[in-house]
Amino acid sequence: MAEKFLEKNADYFYFVFRVLVGLLFIQHGMQKLFGSFGGVGPNGGSVPIISLFGLAGIIEFFGGLFLILGLFTRLAALFGIFDMIGAYYIAHWPQGLIPLLNQGELAILYFASFLVILALGARKWGLDSSLFKKKR
Image 1 (tube, helix red, strand yellow):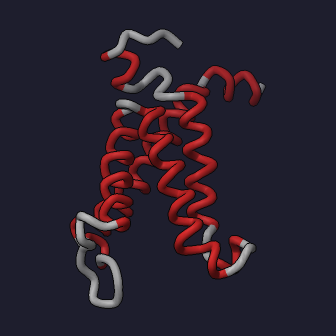
Image 2 (cartoon, one colour; image 1 turned 90 degrees about the vertical axis):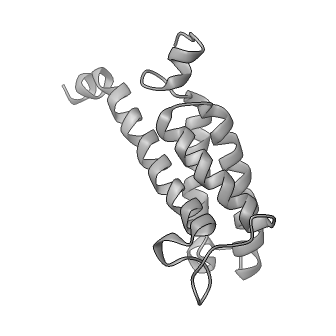
């Protein structure tokens, strides 16, 4: 019975998953680009737009927005994957190999989430399907 329920409502669950990932990811971009949520660094504030952190902020903000809207979903997920590989390599890998100890769990969870989104796209509720007339 639970299996039928899950199968019947898979599109709803996936939509919530995609939007939540997008909402969480966009916050990281807002923090870097606009200094939201306490900003970056000890004094808060934003990062220079022409920098690696600025590029990461652009990917996170617009990638999150695109994931929420289901627009260019697979491309946004691909950029998110590269962003998380870069974040892990630059910020976490030098601190050690174990994600729990190097504080890289979030980057790995985003990486895994973006792999799922890359594989599935926007699915039913996204602008990709209506704008580009794709069928699932």
